[in-house]
Amino acid sequence: MECFVINSFIRNNMSIINCKSFFGCNGFKRIFSLLVGGFIALMLTTAVNAKTLRMAYDADPVSLDPHEQLSGGTLQLSHMIFDPLLRWNQDLGFDPRLAEKWERVDEKTVRFHLRKGVKFHSGNEMTALDVRWTFDRLKKSPDFKGIFAPFESLNVVNKHTIELITKEPYPLVLHTATYIFPMDRKFYDGYDAKGRSKDAIVKHGDAFASFNASGTGPYIITKREQGVRVDFRRFADYWDKQSPGNVDQIVFTPIKEDPTRVAALLSGDVDFIAPVPPADLTRIDRDANVDLVTMSGTRIITFQLNQKRRPELKDKRVRQAIVYAVNNVGIVKKIMRGFGTAAAQQSPKGYLGYDPSLKPRYDLAKAKRLMKEAGYENGFSATMMAPNNRYVNDDKIAEAVVAMLAKIKIKISLKTMPKAQYWPKFDERAADIMMIGWHSDTEDSSNFTEFLLHTPDESTGYGQYNSGNYSNARVDKLVVLNQKETDPTKRKAMLQEIERILHDEAAFVPLHWQDRAWAARKGVDIAPILNVMNFPYLGDLKMN
Image 1 (tube, rainbow, N blue to C red):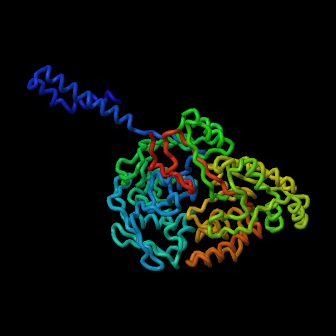
Image 2 (cartoon, rainbow, N blue to C red):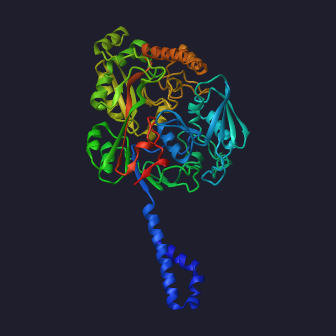
Image 3 (cartoon, one colour):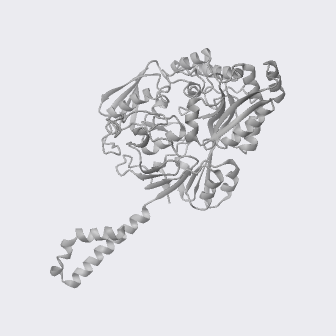
């Protein structure tokens, strides 16, 4: 490579070589030596300053389409190759990104002023038309349209100004704007080589947007082999010239096995890993060459009970028995090594809907009494599915729950699998009991119920991840009502009522809120780019 560049340098400077008769042979040699020496020094300096981050997560994203699947992995990737209108900061406030400022126009309208001169990776300029195109696509996405159900429209005021208009006064406009990662409408226009529309959203499918991307983000994907490796290169025309980030390339390797991922960091094979398994927290914390960063988490880990597949699960007493039989405090203590908080509801402490009166309720004797009252003293058989590389210790947790349910004579047939295979099965509702974890990306209690426990509704997108087919008319009504309520006291009462109904009806099996942990070698300054949402802002990462 260096020889090629130097040869190019010589070819491009033949006019200097041809001037040797003017300077004389010795003079020419001195000048040419200085030029070549300076050029080589410049090349070496550039090579030394170039930073490559080698990182390993437990899994890689299943698609490049930011609207195909509502998941943490999708949103993590979106913050690398796209950019949102605004994003969360570590204090749970909002920082401007592609929208440099905003103001409320009236009770239903918020106006956003877009940055000028922002380029997509294709070279196309980002304008308000791209934002509107993205908004319209989000409203069609099976996974995202539930988030945008309260919105009436996005109005283009001019080339760099838009307005988000809600159907009713809505308290979460800015929260929702963090989901809007403008896409390059010209790049996704037309048809691919197979004659399919490039803007099509196909879950777990072979769509153009699943394998091709043009965003405004700090990185461009240069190579991708699903389940093996993803290579990123910093976008030369990235708009944020104030970013402290100095990482030019990223090599992302998914490593599912916890011990292998930790060993790769400690041996120096990778620079940054996530998540850090609870069993290795102390070991990593004691290593002088590694920095560990931990945060209390707000992601709830649960099991959903499919009432359509198993008639036994329609009986509230059976569902309650299952909840009483699961020792989630013990799971946190033994499997999570204390790196989590046992839950009795969806909303973590600090969220508006959190009800402090709801406590974990392991009681095996009561679970057996409820099974007897329901007429299932001799138990029944059921199937269960869980991922084995999506949540911390997910497969081990599933195995523990299987053993706990055996004590009330529910015989479980368990299958665990990588998340790339798990999510299609989840969408099929392919088992009687299925694991699902959820972090509210709006940092609001309502988001949990909108997606996990509202009656499934394809038209609105509510209940998109309700594999248990739980349905309660009062809960559905409260979900809609709380979205219109701008009085925090009244809204809090609604959200807490939802939590109490779900608790009393054992609508799901609450396990715990999963804490977060990341680790990096010394010199990789990860602390400033991490947050409780688990969206590392890698574009701002500094490496020494």
